[in-house]
Amino acid sequence: MNSTIDSLNTRSSTRVFVPDSVSAAEREAILHSTMRAPTGGNMMLYSIIEIEDPALKARLAITCDDQPFIATAPWVLVFVADFQKWIDLFAVAGVDRVEGVEHRMTPGSGDLMLACSDALIAAQNAVVAAESLGIGSCYIGDILENGEEHARLLNLPQHTFPVGMLVLGRRAKERPPTPHYTGNMVHRDGYHRLNMAERLVAMEELAAMHAPHGFKLGIENHAQAVYARKYSTDFMREMNRSVAWWLERWETAENAGENA
Ligand SMILES: Cc1cc2nc3c(=O)[nH]c(=O)nc-3n(C[C@H](O)[C@H](O)[C@H](O)COP(=O)(O)O)c2cc1C
Image (cartoon, rainbow, N blue to C red):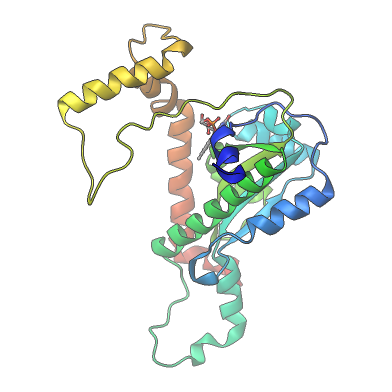
C-alpha cells in the first residue's frame, strides 16, 4: 500500500544482531522520532535510559530472565514511565500558591497508567523509526522483573517505573514476519466474550497457525502451550511479584523522602 504499511507488515522481532550496527546519526534520528510520539497532555511522561555500560548491559541480560542476546545488542533503551520529573518541578514551582484546585503531591494509579501509555507509545515510535532505517528491534518485557535491583541499577526514584526495554540493531539474518493470530481481535460497540463454539474454532485456528513449533512434553494444544510456557512460569511469578513491589513503592507515602 505504502512504505510505512509495508514496513509495519514485514517487521519481526530481531534477536541476532550485526555488532556496532547503529550509527550516532541513526540513534539521533530514531530518538527524535521517538519523542514526536503522542503524549498525554503533552507532558512527556517518560524518560529514556540508554544502556551504554557493557557491564550494566550484561547484568540486565541476566536480570531480565537470562536472555544473553540483550548483552550483544548494539543499542539498548529502557523506557521509563516518569512522573518524578513533574513532581520535582511542582516542588520548585510554588504549586501551593495555585488557587481553586485540590492539592496533591502523590501521583496515583491513573497517573502511572498514563505515564506507562506515554512510555510505550514512544517505544513503538522507536521501533517503527528504526525499522524504516533497516534496524531491527525486540521488546524485553522482563525489565518488569527484579524491581528492587533494577531500581538500584538504573537509579530510579519513587515516581518512575521501567515499563519496557528495547534492544535494537541491524539483523544478522533476515527473518520472515512472525504469524499473528488476528481472529476475534476487533469487536463492535462493546466487548464480545467468545461462546463455547467460537472458542473451539479459535483453538483450531491457533493450532493450525502455531503447531509447526510442535507440542512437546505432553502438551496437547496451543492454549496448553501458552499456559505452560508463558502464563504459569517462574518468570511470570517473578514479574507479578516485582510489579506489585513497583506499585506499592509508587503509592507509599513513606517513600516520599526520595522526592526531596
Ligand atoms: C510487551 C512485550 C514484551 C516482550 N518481551 C520479550 C522478551 O522479554 N524477550 C523476547 O525475546 N521477546 C519479547 N517480546 C517479543 C515478542 O516475543 C514478539 O513480539 C512476539 O513473539 C511476536 O513476534 P514478532 O515481534 O516477530 O511479530 C516482547 C514483546 C512485547 C510487545
